[in-house]
Length: 236
Image (cartoon, rainbow, N blue to C red):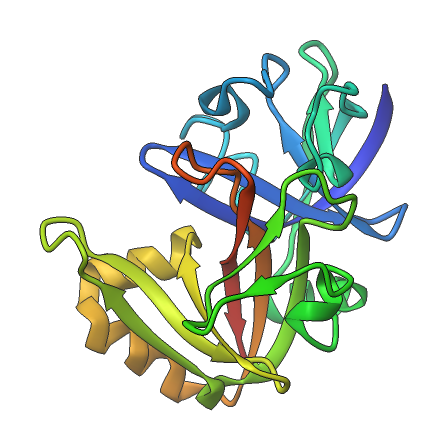
């Protein structure tokens, strides 16, 4: 077990559960804290419930938190195992302070890469549609960030299933355009409240976007592919 101080940068929603990630202040790298009962063979155990993560909770965006955690066991699959950390069930947890969005972006500036491809050491497969993935098992980062002009982002909806539209974004990172799913709890909340026009209008108030980038865990229908997604967005 080791002690960690982490800036919470990513809070992503999966139904009523949350995945969280942040910047390890002492070690200068991204990490992903997971529950003490996490089981890499059963994804639902790898998420936090709303009593621990989400707005107003311990793992809330901008919180600087302290906790005790261990490195993942060898059966945790890469690329996620690069950042996975398993919290101690008995270790003390505390919130040190809360950062404003501007303070957060400044504090985690070293997490920013020149492009999405650079985050994954060019281990990306990119389809003509702009969807992109890393093959499970690649020993690369699964978390990172880019910064772009807010005009380089356009939200749209995937209506393959009309009863369950999904929010996505076309984003150009300066090298190429991607079509990425949105897992950011904050961005999805704006969409749920104000619709597609509302979430696109929210971009127009700002010139720059600090975009948190992550990888999905493999889906049963595509067990080898970890798709690139947008975990969070800070506009300024």
